[in-house]
Length: 616
Image 1 (cartoon, rainbow, N blue to C red):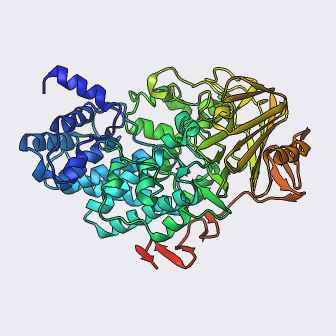
Image 2 (image 1 turned 90 degrees about the vertical axis):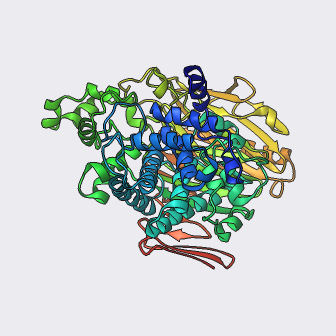
Image 3 (image 1 turned 180 degrees about the vertical axis):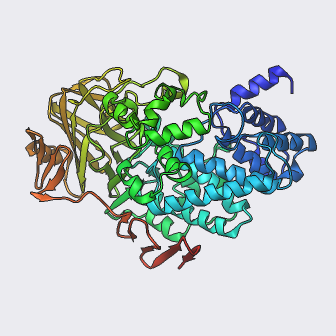
């Protein structure tokens, strides 16, 4: 490949995770092999997300070798053998290995690569393929079991679920170890169940551990759209995109979505779902015991908990052991990599004193509550670390007909300037300071109190919160009360009530100024209220009030948040610490032995430890 062509391919590959002509290979046709060459150039440079691209290369080597020329096959093999599959291997790079999705991506790639070339010596590591396979097997089994036990750290993520589903799909179709295949299929079932429970008319729009501006504001652009279409057939996608990671799921010939998930996804009866995902940092030691690098350490790094008081010592151990000082994502950790501080166990104290804003990156346990009807869906992370720094956590969202999203955030400024780390938190992504939010059926409250200690690296703290409310997408909007805005779309109604007066900045943003701000959201529909006017009359009788640290919404029910303490409905405390899943279709404890799903007699039984999947 000449240099000019190589550079063009690299630029193109930065915006894709695969090659479009893989669809031709799947049909038994020859592909434009320059697309494969572009992917290989990206991988060989070890750009971040090279593991995404490796997935399609490995699929092609497992499935389509008779359709690919020998010179290209040799290039593919060379890239596979020369790749860096984990942080402990030789070579400097700035790939992200540690987030929840990257951990299973790298491990699945390493396993399948080792399986393809068991006797070959991999040129970067000096290990044989068989040795790589064995090493990856341990990581895969550990990752699968921890997600079975605790759910997904990047909870309800309409971006990162695509990146978990792809490596699971690769293992299901091509792994030779039936035990891993079955466990991967069981975890795939849990992803499909989570999607089915939180889909609104084909859109995955729940509260989320990691969510970005585009996907929040326009659910039709979420990254899991092709997966949802293949799994549940809502008709929202006419042509699959074959240059994405979701291609691996689309082309999979072994995994079949259980019928019960399809039925749940299409259920339009009103129901509520409660889930518990991940762990708080305070729960790690209790659940892991020994604080080792490979298990507890990688779980905390999957949470992206680098500079928290309970994680910083292990962070430094990993940082040193795997020589990560030049990684662009982690380079600033060297500021606190001072041997004397580690030896005297002073790092947690230093973190406590500095109060770095990067503590908010940690994706801690989420207790999520979602209520869904045929007209709307409302979803909230209950009492999720209020007044702490935030990052990409999406605390609550209402979704209406036509894919209208409504949510609030405390706008933030990213901690760093470099391109690798400047995407969040931001004006619409995540929060600078998290609210205390809580939901009861069709109503949710959020109280933002920005009076907390300034953090190290914190750029600015706007004394306001804002709502995304896309006026032009509604059929009708009423905004004649400075503290109330009401919208109608089809048969759905929504009202936002503010503690302080609202200012309309543009056709999608409402600003509420103040060091303390409060929001209430109320959903309704044409079956309950005969008209938008009747819903408006009801909403304007409701009162949102703050007394001390208590935010109260008076409706036919009385909802009350006591900041950082609790949530009450009609004076009764509401338990917001949930089991793994609480729903009409499945009730699952944390750290389950088995999981059973049942919808109108269509059933699925899952037993991870005995590798049992039984559909009825």
